[in-house]
Image 1 (spheres, helix red, strand yellow):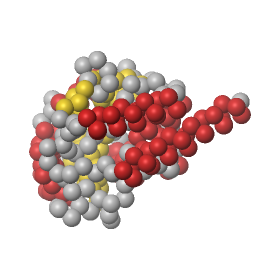
Image 2 (cartoon, rainbow, N blue to C red):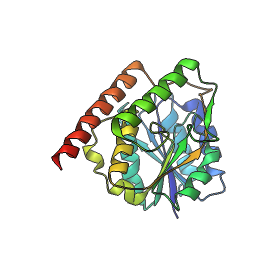
Image 3 (cartoon, rainbow, N blue to C red):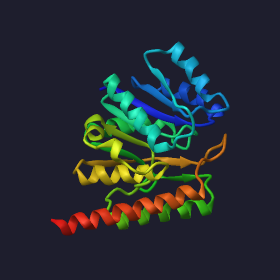
Image 4 (cartoon, helix red, strand yellow):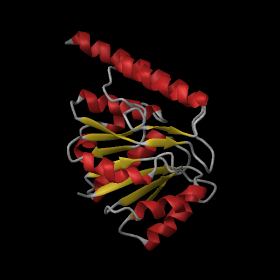
Length: 240
């Protein structure tokens, strides 16, 4: 098994060194692909230094600017395909997704095609998040589940482990959503292709360093994505 974790970054200089140190210290043979969107604070340059020290484990994809989470993941996926990785994970750089859960994600991927680090299964939860953010996250998750008929408990989570064949079965270049709504669209297509989905409990902790990238526009775009996919789902259902 060759696991890799894709970490998109924009202005995560306060976190990237600590994160890479913890990822490379895990008791698994893990590699990292950092996709950096030309962070003004020097995140990409800091990652480059790690790639020089650990060329077999750390790669950095530099992009011209802040192009969005979805396209960052796709760039990372394609680099992972080229390098022959068969377990491809995604996570945030701000420690809201803690590296300590990665061995559990990899273990369950032996039985499931997609594994989600989930807040909403027994043992999961959130820490240091405001009441408003908890309500917003729960509401967005419930809305996506109901409108799209999704089975996973945590459909909006970005802490995931995909088997390579899952990602290769999806036409990544045809995915229209970007930002955090990309996560909803991905799980929609994973379920439609009858891949198996598992979840492991995690504690999602609000970031301690840096600033959040989630805006009101991101929430609005996510709602638009769910509505678009819902229309597609019912059109396909009645066309059968």
